[in-house]
Length: 86
Image 1 (cartoon, one colour):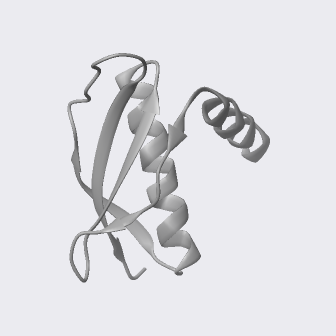
Image 2 (image 1 turned 90 degrees about the vertical axis):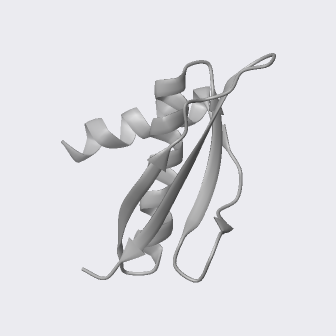
Image 3 (image 1 turned 90 degrees about the horizontal axis):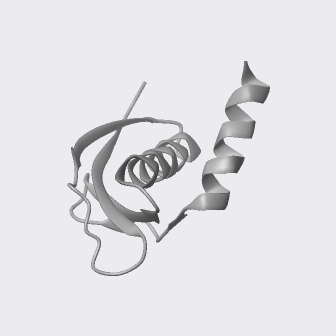
C-alpha cells in the first residue's frame, strides 16, 4: 500500500506544482498549488499541507479548499489549514 501511495504522489507531483506554505496567523497557513484540474491541484496542496504538519510532528486539519482559478494555463487552488497535535 505504501508503494502505491508513493507512486501516486510522484505522479501527482509530475503534473502539478505548489508554492511555499504561507503563515496567515499564528496557527493558520495557506498553500497554493497548480495543476491541469482542480482536483489534482487540491490533492497536491493537501499533500503538501500534510507533509508540512508531519515535519512538525503534527497532523493537518484543512479549513478551506478554494474553488480554483484558471485565467490561462493550469488551475490554481489555495488550501487553508492548521496543524494539530496528535
